[in-house]
Image 1 (tube, rainbow, N blue to C red):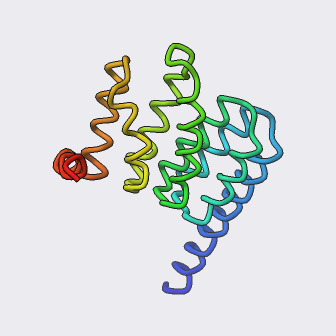
Image 2: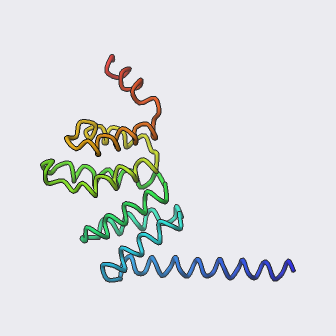
Length: 161
């Protein structure tokens, strides 16, 4: 019985590895919707080892839909190594006039940074606390609460220095 159970788990593990490998292949070599779907599947695996590959795909990717799926996948994986790459996208988006910013991308960036929970993101999210878009402001406040529950106290302390 033990042997059969081991074989079943071994096959499940192989299936999972095959699915993961196929998703990685599609992320770099598929058509647009295949790449977007692959990014989403990779995020569902929640494998930290995928973070560097997703970051590489993000640097190469031009399609906005695929970029958004990669941002989501990085948030699902919750690896702090993704923080700075996502922050780069945030900075790029914030360089645009507010009425030209991609609100969907901003939401995905904030949500992913919130899931990752890396305090390095806070200084970059700060500008969104004064966004004209009330939904973005509220989500940013939620991100601050999630990443650093004492953010208001810490901010007040740093302003006194």
